[in-house]
Length: 59
Image (tube, rainbow, N blue to C red; front, top):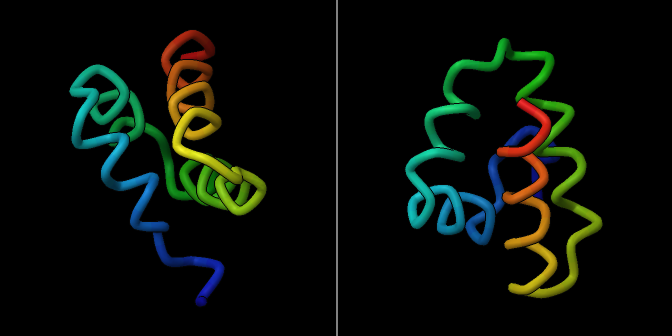
């Protein structure tokens, strides 16, 4: 997988959470890439939800 592509699980999690999607969309490219890179360590749906919740709370 190309490390610059958005993982499907992350895309789906964002699609289910409009607040997270909006906050992600407002980030610059460097910030987006840092978050995408972090998704490569996520191992489950539950972990992805926690990762998305963290995105919301830190923005």
